[in-house]
Length: 172
Image 1: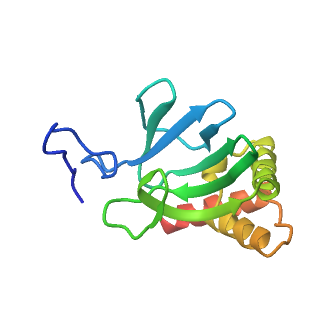
Image 2: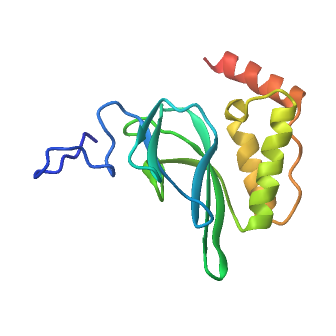
């Protein structure tokens, strides 16, 4: 899929993948109203649109966490976190709001108690000295499935991470 250009302005449309093959994520931050942020992941590019919005881009294969929270006058209306692997052009993917063209969704969690639990698990992985971006995709899927079933996920350990790195090295 190539670049889609607005015929009036000649500019690239955000909803399409540019020729650079990056996955783009639109982030919005309006204090105490809309707060979308990247919890982890190596950003390849960043474009500031205005004081409340920016677009960050990820290279194919990069794993990142997108957290979204929004509220109105009556309280929280959305609390969600998605852990996503950016896909290469032509690769199968799922669509996701604010992510273009989409990605391989490894974990999706909604509701503050579940989102908070995922954030705690990410903190725990970082306390082991492991970058959450480098964690096995299978582990994120495991966490998703266990939380969906209302069960506690197994902890990610240094031994599991070493096994993942060795398996990845052998597969290359």
